[in-house]
Image (cartoon, rainbow, N blue to C red):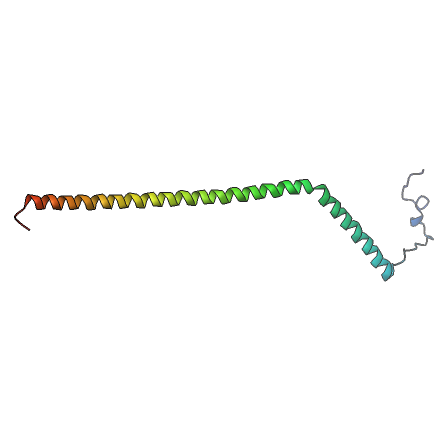
Length: 119
């Protein structure tokens, strides 16, 4: 095997009388057929990629669903906590109002008993 040094003797393309014959253009049918074959090969490669990564997709899908479930339950828990706090505050306020009302009634009764003659 000889080394290509770029001189006309080594490379026939560089010779003066060398006639370069360009490859012929493909016909429309040949181009369409070539494109169909390339598309089929690309489709097969994509299908093989999906099949090879099916386990990874399932794992990712499960993690996303668990994150959504955690967020949903966390949201419900926080809503329940807020609601219970509000209910506790309302109950406390009602009890306080009731206690204030009872003590004011008792004070009025005690005052009335102290001033029996005055109505």
